Length: 133
Image 1 (cartoon, rainbow, N blue to C red):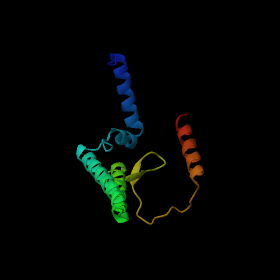
Image 2: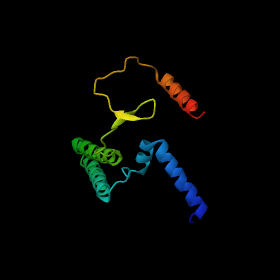
Image 3: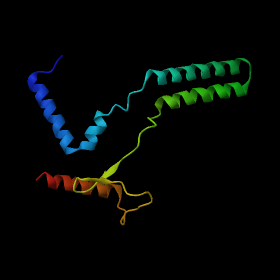
Image 4: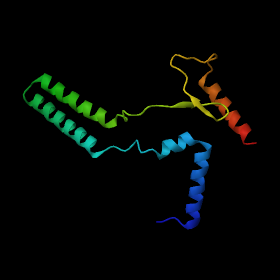
């Protein structure tokens, strides 16, 4: 069912607002990194079926080592199916308290005061609530 003209305008306005409020989140939502190609699924399927055949053959011939190899092949195929993309570079920077994005700190750099997770969340919540006023 197509959207009405009014609904399309509202949706576009919401997209623009999201992009201006949180560009990193908007970029993450627009990326197509979650899609996997057909070739990947063919490899996974072939690995799983091959492992299952080895497992059954190992059980039929009473060869434990063949069954173990088949199981490992099946397990590896399933792990490969659910593995994330290897080309993910990770975060490029950090968002500061004032909303600007800066470079990521060097590895091994630790903040002066380590606060608890809940304390940081409460502080962020208070900052957002104060900005809305």
